[in-house]
Image 1 (cartoon, rainbow over the protein chains, first blue to last red):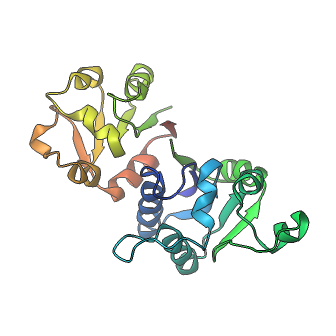
Image 2: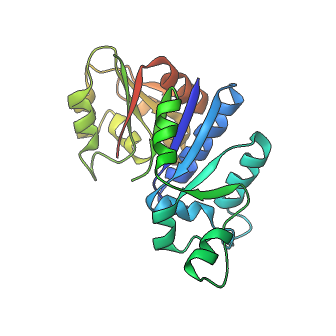
Length: 130
Length: 98
């Protein structure tokens, strides 16, 4: 089965980032294909590399990056939601005159069309959030 | 067309359990995750809303909240994340009641 996952909630907010991560991991372990993970609304905050959670807590951002590296996951951050919340890659920094970037490894910033494509191309779209 | 209805909020906080239960029909499953697992507690007033429906709860979210499986309403299935994936595959579509 081919899946697209949508995450609407930021890390450490309630539990949606954790649920989405564990679901994605379980689906991969069962041999399913994750077409894309799309981060929307406050979910874009899953993609900043500047978080420093306590050492005895899970690192939500790094966990996504590691899963992406391991399984070549396409982690896409919604551009309009990212601009509002200050999630910046090189292209966005140049386009909007920002003096820094903060996007985490494995993530990329793109448009809402990527979510629509994910929904169309996948067998199921599973949404996590508030 | 069977549907997996996913609910993640407590029925004592939001009405999404009741909404999902109202739309669920024969062949569908209601999956309770995160705070929605409280809806499956037999002694809670919300469990009546789910009677007659096929209901599953995520075991790790139950355990995280200290709810023992013997406190659940009759007929409620406990699944792990692999079981969650299987439910997504088994149904024709998925609806998250956010």
